[in-house]
Amino acid sequence: MQWRLVRPVKILMEKSDRLANGELDEPIALNREDELGRLAHSLEMTRRALKHSFGELEIKNQQLLEYSSTLESKVKQRTHELENANTNLEAALKDINSAQAELARVERMAALCSMVAGVAHELNTPLGNCLLVASTLEDETRRLLQMVEEGQIRRSDLTRYASTALDSTKLLLRGLQQSAHLVGDFKQVAVDQSSAQRRKFGLLVTLQELSALLHSGLKKTPYTLDLDIPADIELDSYPGPLGQVFTNLVNNAVIHGLEGKPSGSMRCSAERQGDHVQIVFTDDGKGIPQDIINRIFEPFFTTKFGQGGSGLGLSITFNMVTNVLGGTIHVTSNPGAGTRFELRLPLVAPGDAKDDTMYFGS
Image (cartoon, rainbow, N blue to C red):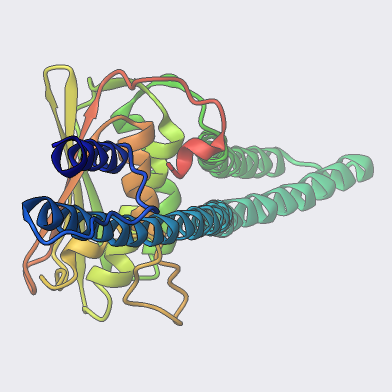
């Protein structure tokens, strides 16, 4: 019994313990044909199967380690590539914003230069008249002095000279007052346009000053501009950006809405609504096609590409209204029925203007 049963069972138990401990290299065999021999054969098959499975697992584990290392390397590489791409995109976005800001500044200054040319043209007439009247008065004065020196002066000469001097003085004062008024309007508008300084101002007075300066350009067209604004609407805001918005809307109407029409009109009205003011700018032009009306505030979008249009006018208008003036702007239009811009602005604008970058938004 010891030799045929107890000892073989102990051997099989030892082999089974080794299998449990993962010792799979030593074969299991009993040269017997009975149940213990079959049990030993079964344990051997189990050992071989486990060894095969562990071998495959080792191979898979090695492959996973290699793949993990490769994947980590690829992740690092892709992360580095994404960081480079992100850096390049940030640089490109910065360049685009810088270019947009520069183009907007150039457009604003171009509008101001155009206004300067218009003011110079408007000043030419009254100042030319003043020069002619002053020259005439000088000639009359010299003739009077000569008559006094020669002792040939008569009462009628003095009367005629006094009448001429009075008429000349009236003409001079009228021309100079007109010039001074025009220069005063331009001075305030130029200061507002070239800076983003905040101050209290009357809406009607500000838009009247701008309308007076835009009048010289509108005189060359068959189009009119009317204001319907209560005199008691006062804002604590930024007249420069607001003036640029008004100028852009007028220019947009003339260039796009009214172009080619034998006559046309623009109208700007305002109504106080609590702590806000609603400004409505309309024209009776050809309107905006429905397929592009949702794109008119996009930067660089223009139907005048290659014809002097930069596509920044209404984009700058949108940014000024929303980012600087703290308001909203909406547009409605039907082809052939004109265009309507509705601006809703707070009477007291939020924030402080620190630099011209506020003109363009981010």
